[in-house]
Length: 107
Length: 388
Image (tube, rainbow over all chains, first blue to last red; front, top):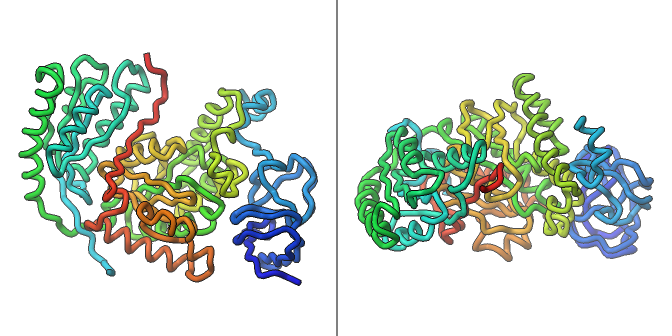
């Protein structure tokens, strides 16, 4: 049965949505954004303000929120999984990847 | 209370203040404790603690100098007593002379010239006593919102920042711009990943080019450190609040800028010369950003927070807006407005925007913010060079 936990998806292009309540694992939540509508089984506990995948995301794929790129998946992410620092990397300000950055930034 | 008219203090340089402080301005770390003692003795004076003003060179010297002068010339300040030591690189005399060009009362007290700490405190307190009484004789007069510079800032962000308080401030930002006022967007670090959206709103190619330049310079500084910027930004609190990457935080932060064209890109602590939406190049560090905007002439600041912060300025009211209700309830003595009602679905973004706008007008005209009441006198300069 669909739960009443609230979620928000900012843009139809997004592959993640944000939990507006603490959502316990195994809950079924409804996510809507304009013409998009998903019914998702939450795979693990999701904290208030945290994100979960609304579609399967493969390692190396961009993560979209607000219709914009917020990072890249560092692992395969299944629908309903928590999307956070353990499976997403930022693409900007990556001094730890200095060689790649040098070519990317022309320095 | 609903209010339509703004009331402020007209200064001799034509600008309008929303407060009427006498600032005891220590231009060197060595004078900060003495300056604080003066504020204990004399009602109506403010000061702040910092660690700058000596053994600084080049552009770093210039930026610190500009920040001191900007604090003194901010129209919220009636008059200034510059307190120096005597032997430092940032000479109190040069800073006092620069502030005096604004036409406001300025005095200089140096610890070495006044026979040590106690003599300097006594002299500064004596001068301040007269200055405070003179300041108190000034009466507020009506002024137009087009004379207002409003700083915007987010600190201690969470995943709600980009959903509630920041878009609500963006709504207010558009209201101010549409009425002829000026809004400062800042924290360049926290616009990395959202720069294309702002560059598209630049009034001309020159401003758009500058957007990419300041972003690249900020990102290069992080890359030069050889680490992932995420080790410092988003902060541990941001990440706990659900923000995963700097890009995600930036897209939420950019919502504060509303939707109007970007008129100008200015340096740290520089005064805008255009009205409308202006971007000041500052780091994401809350206090350094706040100081830069206030030194750039902002009379008031709208500050959103998800995790909750006590941030305030010695000379400018900072209206603090909570992104979520649980934090607002928990930190009521620090937060002025709750935008968490947007998250709960009990209030529209526009309605919260109208509430913030009304609070802005009230605060401009004299209502005190929580950070003023709690004497949260934060000050920090964005240092861009080493100390020697």
